[in-house]
Amino acid sequence: MGVSVIIIGHAGSGKSLLTNNFSRYLLNQGYSVASVNLDPASPPGYATKADIRDFVKTEEVMQKYSLGVNGALLKSMEIGMEHIDDLCINGEHDFVLYDTPGQLELFVFTEFGERLVKRIEDHCACVFIADSSRIKNSSHYSATISQSATVSVMLGIPALTAFNKSDLREVKDPEYYLRELKNEGVLGEYFEPLLRFVEITSTVYRQIRISAKTGQGFYDLFTAINEVFCACGDLS
Image 1 (tube, rainbow, N blue to C red):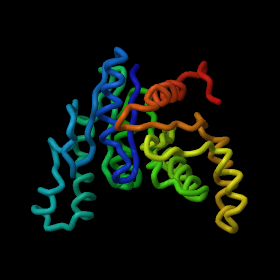
Image 2: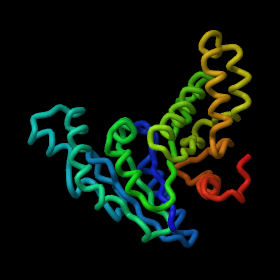
Image 3: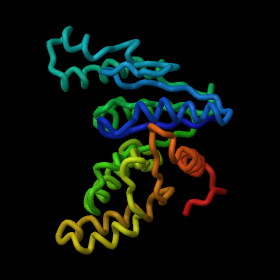
Image 4: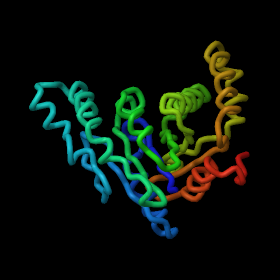
């Protein structure tokens, strides 16, 4: 049985670039890899095994239904649900990377994401891509980590947080932000127990720092994904 990795993050976080370059990394390690584009609004820019845009394109939905961008995106995902069987790649590859829409709510908070995850027969995990350049203090860090936990709860699968663009800005260790929260006043009092909750419920709680552009940290990401499904790994 292979491993399916659903790559989720906010617009501009580097999901498509990671899908492209991490698939190359895995191929160079000798694994068979397939990539799937689930964004109906954007051509993938890399070779795909399946592409939602073969079935629905957001720009065409806008014209056909006289919708604005947001309405057309939601309608596109609704149409995409009719083709979920065509978008799930099961049992054919060691790894399948699913590149999700730029607006993460289109996958996480719609029926599309839930249905797709249920159709995946391989081991399935999520990689939540956080933009390191936006982590400016302990509150920003805590809010980002809590989003990853929300993704895991909504989809019902393990979620790893990978801090992308670490070649531009380095995110500090979790313990640093826990200490700094004590100086954040009321906001810190809110986030501190939340961060500790995520710490004890996360499958792998160590900092995963990557650069989707340069490939920095890809080995750490690769081993963390494997550890989600292997009790023999070092999860500390």
